[in-house]
Image (cartoon, rainbow, N blue to C red):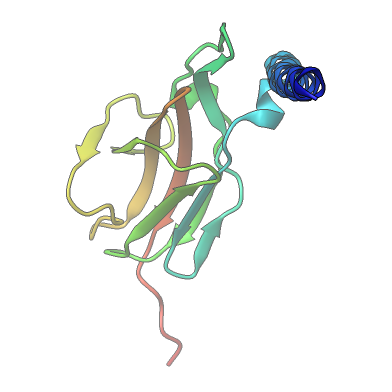
Length: 162
C-alpha cells in the first residue's frame, strides 16, 4: 500500500515538472519568434486630442528585451520619420495610451515638421495656444524596454461660417 502511494507521488512530481518545463519552453519559443519580428509584438500607441485620433504615430526606435535577447533599432529624429500633421484645436488635452501599461511616459514638443529641438511637457500634456504645426516625441519606458514615437499636430482655431 505504501509502495502505491510513493508511486503516485512520483507521478505527480513528474507531471508538475513536465508542466513547468513545457511552460518555460513555450515562453522561450514565443520570445524567439517575437524577437524575429519585433514590430508585430511591441506595444501599440494610441493618441487622441479632442475629436482627433492620430491614426499613425510612427515608431522611431526601440530597445526591447525578448527573454535573454535584447533587440535594438536605430533611434530616428523627426526629419527621418514620415509625419502627417493632423488637425487639432488649441489648448486641448492630448491623451497617450499604449496596449501594455508603461512604467513612465515622457512627452516632448517641438515646432515645425523638421524640428530637432524639443521641450519636455511636464504637468499637462496639451496642444499649445499658438497656432502652428507641432511635433511630439513620446518616450515610453516599460519593464522590457523603451519605445520612441513621433506624431504631428496642426493646431488651428476653428473658423466659423457667418
